[in-house]
Image 1 (spheres, rainbow, N blue to C red):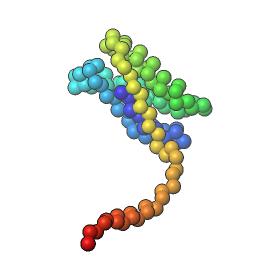
Image 2 (cartoon, helix red, strand yellow):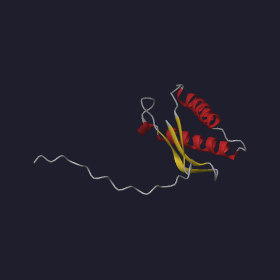
Image 3 (cartoon, one colour):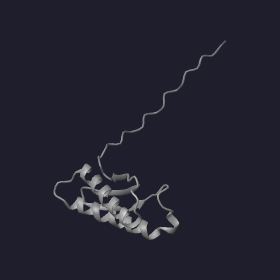
Image 4 (cartoon, rainbow, N blue to C red):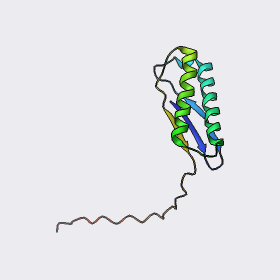
Length: 110
């Protein structure tokens, strides 16, 4: 899984990409592979952010393809790649004031 947080309006990557592996390689012995994969994801995402026309589907597909080619070259394996792209400041929602809780009426037996 490749997780990246972006700000599309500012065309910036907010957080360094995080690469998570489950059953593909042993992460502790493959730190270089994980770091290089994160750098590749970062470059790919930034290239897509710099494009005039931004497309979520194209971004995710580009991450999948580039990471898949890189990992095949390094390991001769094809892992399942799940790109997760999170966007900050998607919608500026108005915060509503919290309504006080209604008192619960209980039946009293007299």
